[in-house]
Each structure stands twice: as structure tokens, then as C-alpha cells.
Image (cartoon, rainbow, N blue to C red; front, side):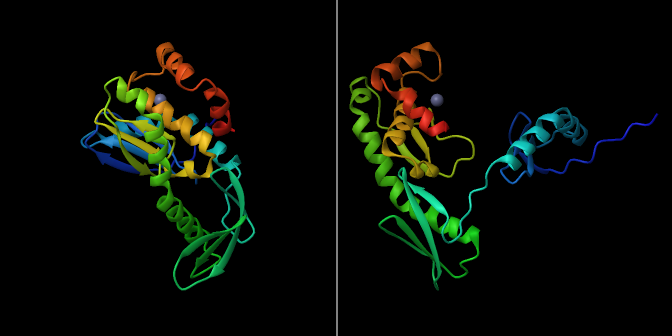
Length: 224
Ligand SMILES: [Zn+2]
């Protein structure tokens, strides 16, 4: 009896000053492995091999996910409002909202990546003001507890909606601009509560319950 060897798994290897190995599967199914600078290649291989089933699982999940399209007539969301994309040719990228339509001009209207990029840049232009307002409106209670106002950074985040760093930054995902203000407020409140507790234990959730009693309903809108 002979055993078929599994097909080779292709991945991108990124070495950096880090201590541990990490593997991630991108939405397009491609695999990236992050490794310490000097870790032997055979140990990287062994690690990838040990994660093979998990990687295949992730790739199947990614493939099953409905793909977001960026064509003329496709739906898109802005602050929880459903809009319709209207894509046309334009010398330079531009985006403007007209009622329930989002008009996007790009050099090639069939270039979905360019349309997506233009819309993300449009979100970016509006996100800072929107997120900052939410932070400052919800911050006074934390200020009374002696916390300093965290500095906002708006980022394209891969797998999270937000994070709070011990160095005083609150990072929020640009993609939150698709969601209703109540959901954005929930993510901001979650991160602000990390000023008190750097974990997700019972004390953290008790604080969330006090600061935002309806947070589970808001979270469900984010997860759904
Ligand atoms: Zn958290």
C-alpha cells in the first residue's frame, strides 16, 4: 500500500524580530507565515505541517464566504445605511453620495480593486471625525477615573474591530464605517473599558453592562 503525500502547501514567509511562529490565511486563501529572524527552515516547515488541517479549514471557510463585489449596481453600506454603488469612468478617483447612491468615479469602472480602494479612502476621510466624536462623548466617565484620552488611529484591520494599547492608542477599524453609529459606539466603549481592565474577564463584562446595558444587542449586529 502506498500513501499519497499531501499536496505542497504554498505560503509566503515573513521573517521579523519576533519570538513566535504565526500563520494566517488571507481572505483570498493565500497563506502567510511569520517567523523569528533566525529560526531554522525545517522548524518553520514542521510548524506549517502541524497546522495543515487548520489551514485547509480556513481556506475552505474563506472560499465559502460571499465575496464583496464592487461593481455598478452592487450594494454597499455606509453607517448602517444600504446604498447602491454607481460606478462610472473618471480621470481621477472620486466618491460622492447622492441620496441612497454612492457615485464612484475611477479610470476603469471594471477595476473592482480600484473602486474598493476609492470607497475605503472616502470612508477614511470621514472616519476620524466620526470615531473621535464617539470617543469624546463616551470618555468623561473614564476621565473621572483618572484615565487619559487615548489617541485615535484609524486602520485597515484584518481580524479585529478595534484594540487599545497600553501606550495610549485606541485603534479602530476603517471597516466600521459600514456599521450604524450605535455599533461604532459599542466598539469604542469596549475599547475604553480596557482602560480599566486589560482582559475580557467577568469584571470587564460587568463594567460593559454598567456603561452600556444593551451592548450584547449591538455586538450581535456586528457579528451578523
Ligand atoms: Zn477587547
